Structures are given as structure tokens and as C-alpha cells.
Image (cartoon, rainbow, N blue to C red; front, side):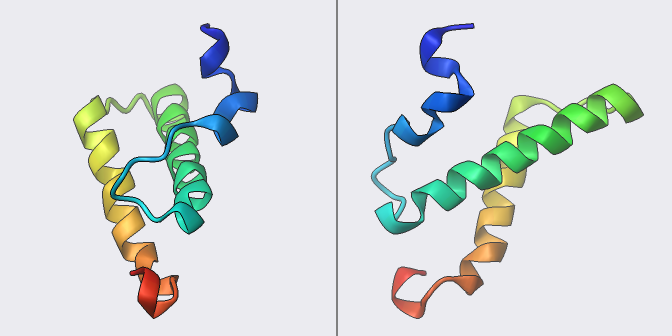
Length: 74
């Protein structure tokens, strides 16, 4: 594993331009949650999920949870 890919470096990921800085850490945690769910699906339920589908799931959840943000951050 590359040193930059370690879990301890998650807080140092570069923020995409289109994501509010105030909510970037929440988005990273959302992606980690989806990685965890994907891993469990593969290990315990023999699911297969490709990367585009995984990213789409992250995006859909982020949109769904965006209603919890302050109105000015939506």
C-alpha cells in the first residue's frame, strides 16, 4: 500500500473544487462508509460492484444527505 493511501492520511486528501470545504470531511466519511458496505457485500454476500457503480452510490447518498446541510451550503 502506498504511504499516501493509509487511513491516517484521510484528513489530508485534496478537496475537489465543487465540494464545500466545510463539509468535505463528512463526504470522506460517507465514502468510507460505502467502502465498508462494499467490502461486506463482497466478503459475506458474494456481491460484485464495479467502481462506477460504487461512485454513483456515494454520489446518490451525498445528494440524499445534503438536505441535512444548512440551506446556504446545499
